[in-house]
Image (cartoon, rainbow, N blue to C red; front, side, top):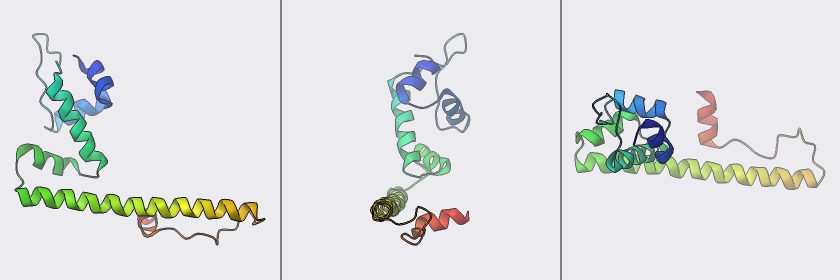
Length: 131
């Protein structure tokens, strides 16, 4: 399978695949013509790299996992930290959802659309707004 098909199968763009390869996260064998040939192992690696990225791990952290530079305790610390970040984001999303629902009901009760007193930003949103 070549890069276009691998991108489609994995949900990772061809550009990102090349970037991951350049950063050493992937090693894709090439055929005699120099064309990348993706197998199931390469697709699986792409998927779990994406899973780690979605969990908030950096490329450096993912590289440490791939190269085995982490102890089991270090790996578990990374996963725990990622889990805590996700839990905080989920809490903030729930707050935002509740805020929107409150605004919706307030609007139905006659509140002006520009009244911003109903909800305050969550700590995660406020922190990232400053960045």
